[in-house]
Image (cartoon, rainbow over all chains, first blue to last red; front, side, top):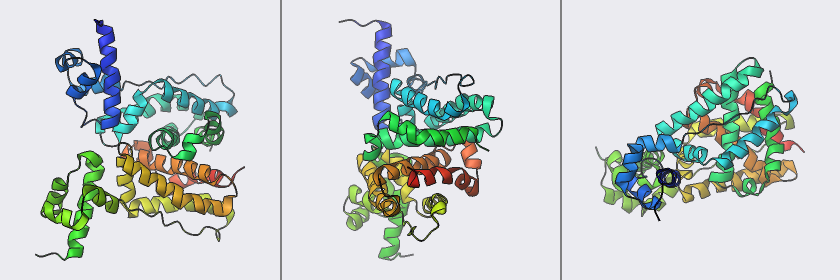
Length: 180
Length: 180
C-alpha cells in the first residue's frame, strides 16, 4: 500500500513523538523513528531536514487558550484546569515536551515559551499585575498534576476522575490567577 | 593522595548523582561515572555491585518530615512547603529522581514510594480521610514548583524568593492537607 506524502509525514510525526517521549531527545534516533514508521531513514531527513527540526515539528504545541474575558470571573480557575486536561489528552506534544524537557534544553525552552508567551498574555488581560509570576504558578500546578498523574503514575492521582482533579485544583488556579 | 573507602564511595555517589541527573538513567554509564570520580570502573562495581544498585543508593531519599501534630493546624501548609524547599536543596537525590523518573520506571517507583509511603502516613495522622489522594495532590504541587523553578527554569519561578514561593503555595498545600 502506497502512502501519500501527508500520510507519510503524519506517520513519521507519530513515531517521533513516541520515541522522543520514551527514549528522551538525545537517545531517540532518526533510524529508530524511521523503523517505527516503516520507512527509510533518508525519507525522514528529506521531509524534516534534521533530528532537531523533526523534534521542533513534533512538539509544536499550542495551548489554544479560550478567551476567558467573557467567562464569570469566579469560574476562571475551573475553566483553565478543564481546558488543560483536554489539551493534554488531545495533543501528545505536551507530554513529549514534559518528558524531554527535564534533560533537554531545547524542549525546556519550548515549554517556557508555551507557558510564558501563550499563558502570560491571557492572564495579563484580566489579572492586572504579576502576570508572568501567575503564569509560572499555574504552570507549576498543571504540569505537576500531569507529571504525577500521567508520567509518574501515582496511584491516587491516576484513580481521580477529571471532575475530582478539577474540583481540587480549580481553587488553586483561581487564586494564582486572580488573588492579591 | 590516597582516599579512604568512605571517601571513594562518597566521590562515586556524587559523580553518579550528577551523571544520572544530566544523562538520565539509561544513558549514564558506570564508565563515565568512574571517570568523573577519578577511579577505575572495576572499583565502582566492587563497591556497588551494579548500575541498578548504584542508582538505588545514589537516590535513597528521605523526606524527613517533621512531626506536624504539634504545629498549629493553620500553619501546616506553610511548614510543609518550607520543609520541602529545604530538603530539595539539602539533598540532590530528589532532583535526580525527578529528572530520571520521567523516563525510568525504577526512579518513578522510588518517587511513588517517597510520596506514598512517607507523606501519606503523616497526612493520615491529622487529615482524617483520603490521605493518599491528599499526598498525591501535595506531590503534584511541590514537584511541579521544583520542576518549573529548578529544572525547566521558568524565569518568573526562578526569580521568586523562597518566601514568595511559600506565600503563594502555603494556602494550596494547606487546603490539600486539611480541607473537606
